[in-house]
Length: 288
Image 1 (cartoon, helix red, strand yellow):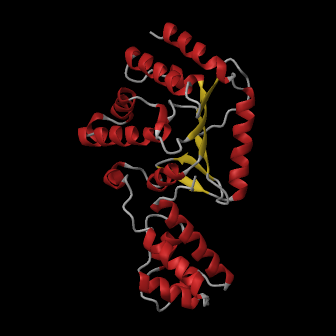
Image 2: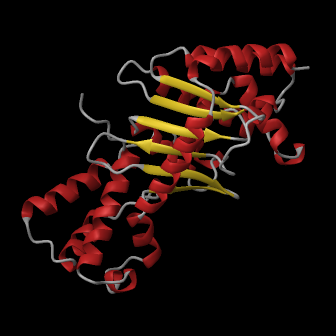
């Protein structure tokens, strides 16, 4: 099956190649844009794939400055730029996303597999409508939360869940949940019991593995949630992690290696996937 390549993915690949070409000729961003009619900020955003594209005429000027003379190489980059103009499906929800989230959501749609750790709340793609709604209603003071803001976040989360069940190559998921995330009552007892049932339902799928890290275990726990996204070769993996007020996404090899080690350490200590359903049933009985 051919690898999926959405507009976010293509923008990121274009940016990486332009950064590589600039560094190959030894230019800073300031030197690269000098006299070309667009800003250092614009080129910086293009190179990092943050929903920004150069105009065709600006891209041609950059390729000239970088000494790209091979016609096939030039056409490949111009085609990548044109293909990146496609409308992202998440665009209507951009205003309710934190910084960095649009890029992550775009890459998430192109990923082959995601490995995630969630210590605070139920993993996003597992959340029910009632859980999401309650989470956003209680996450901020009432005066800072509008009905439109909450409902747009609910719709976005539900649309993203289709990645798990899509007919054309469903997303492979391996998720580790901390027991404390499952015991944190969001929206009341009924909402939590419904949420436990949803996790069990998804965990029964062939493309989903869920493990729980019990509170009684004295073992390593990463202090922030993160997700490792793997793509069809030869594309590099990326890691997403939460930082205050925004989402960080990087493919820096040392960071990807570090989070791989962290995930593997917690995976090895967590309960076996076969124990997940029984653990959720026990939580449903205990919750008050």
